[in-house]
Length: 389
Image (cartoon, rainbow, N blue to C red):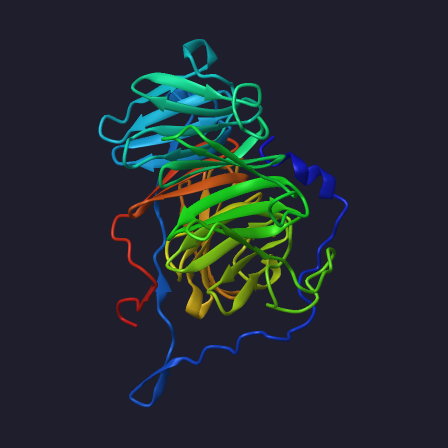
């Protein structure tokens, strides 16, 4: 349901980049005592927990997760939940408990006020504060559409990415701003994702790539695939890999963007595209993306969870689970070269991953069959040489 528009594209076969123009040169190995030294290994999450309706979730289909201190908010197909990390108890709210709408598709927290902002799939926008739900929709506000895919807090404003454009709500003045093809560079108005950082708002738009809004200037900038081809990425790394954008994440001045046909990284000067046939991505169909840093990003795909653990060396860790045996595995690879396969019991609850939330060294993974927690004891950034190597 969260990615319903994908059904329109099941007849498309994307072959990714066939040209190598603009491709980055291969990284040379480090040299020690005159001899090349292979890059080290990335951190692999070996400890996992799983939460389902048996543990108190209102539904196992998890659309969104937001960590806030000792609380983890979880948006599902049939209600909102909050997991207390200290007590490990889950409390849930459904429509009978005051939740304005059944399906919760997006979450964000105002860190100044503690308010939880909730995107509702068909029900508009809600705020949960002081045990009370407040509700905005098309008939009582400036919300442009009630199908809300993404929510982001920006200063005193809240952005809602909807299927008919984006809305910006000033929580102090109560004013609304609406952005559609009439006043923003949207070739299509179906907005999938939104994020805010460093004075910039990024929108992931179905058919319009990524839009950047400069809060101070009030100006827009668009990022499209410049070759203009919908079916293939004609020229390698010339821009975003595809205009059907599903997620955006901006961290350390690097933009990470996911699409239904691969993913992209942009550092302000150079683009880099990622495809399943040449990386650790288990699939080009990406539901969401989140960057931990300029060097590390997590990809939520329809065939598993992928982590680009070290961008500089193209080192990946891919997590999947065999649903029959309940055994999991983590595959470490550099480009297409598999370095190690590690058994885990299990890891992701399901290979259809809808959302990933980073929480310190841990990660929360929303899937079609429950919520997973990757426990990051001993986590380290980048690569390390293995002992004895």
